[in-house]
Image (cartoon, rainbow over all chains, first blue to last red; front, side, top):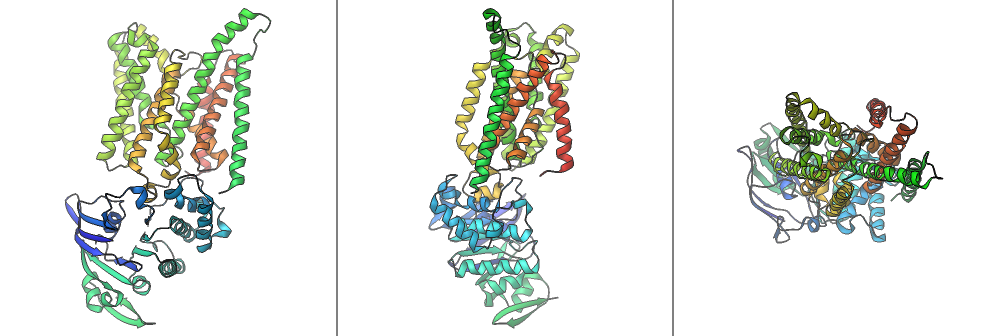
Length: 250
Length: 325
């Protein structure tokens, strides 16, 4: 997936300014940066949720605008934070929606098997018949991830998946992201606020400042004292723990 | 999927269908003189079109309310919020005011229904395609616009009635107050045609309703053109409301009750079940209510009084028990 010269303005203010990068296949890529740096907007444009002003997002050689939405939904999944379902929906029914791009509302036996696997993968068997609105935040997040797994796409985009989760659930979330990549071979792109999660669990980091890319590279390349200080405008120290660079900021 | 829950829901709907049929039979044959063939025929001639109108209205309001609530993603809204009821009132007042109560447009039921449909359809198209795009597809704006339009239309209508000839106002009032004793049976064929057309044209969008309720982001993720479907569904809701209003007058409060009863009973996200449940509830309430009105109260109290009183209590219960609101 290639992103080229992407630009987006809101009310005359440029939020994404000539962003160009390429998403490495089969890896975990984290988008980081201060508030308002445009990382979530870039994510929205890549996943066709937000319209762009100019630039290109080419996916498998074709611009995503030229893709049929249904076809794209079999290859690319996005999970945002705006998930407020008013319906009486059980966990399993939610996961089943992941098969919609393939079979519509008439699910086949094969679909049911994939749903079973996704439910089992996220360890949701015990609560699969509970209603979504009766779950805790962590459980709900896992149910949505299971839906994305059932959608069976090569690319998975997650917009701030650790938001509103405590340390336990957030860390588990990041471990799941890692497993999605290592065990299931997915390409995962996520927007993150916690730099250390990005450093510990990703392969690549793309840092945004003022709608532009400040630095794109492997974790080691981006996680340096100088780069991070320049991006966040606070002092940083970099430590190394189990072979990964972690940052302390104050 | 939960096969058991699904089958339980099918059973519930089956029981409701039986209740609908029972109510319809009771309405048709209550206090009829079977011995006298002429009287029997006369009663049938009066009652059959009324029954058909009630069934159509219940279906139109029940379906439209479920679809509207799911589109807005809120269980306590009714399609009255779109401002279409006040537009209906305004259209009829304007016709009587400018053309007179005796004019073709006011006295020919099919013509005045056609005028309603065209104007309400046109207004809805403008609001939901133009304004919807202009306001970045925000459903909340649709509600806000609806509320503003409601007061706008009502103000014009009130002004017109103030300066109107009292005799004309009297005849106008007949079409503005909901009543099942005074229903519009002349437009049955046209209404059925409109409803059938709406369902046929929107059949794909209706099938998408389950996915649409996941919200814009999730629906788009699953490959659904969210904005287009929402626009088309809102237009369909408007036309259904137009049909129901033209037949019996403005009673969309009923929609709030039956849609919520259906959601509470069936506890599912599957809209084909919810819509059927809502329609069946509507039929039971309307036909049963009218039966009581005609035979117990002998027309002393119109059925809309029951709907408002019962509905008001149920609405308070919904608010206080905070069921998914």
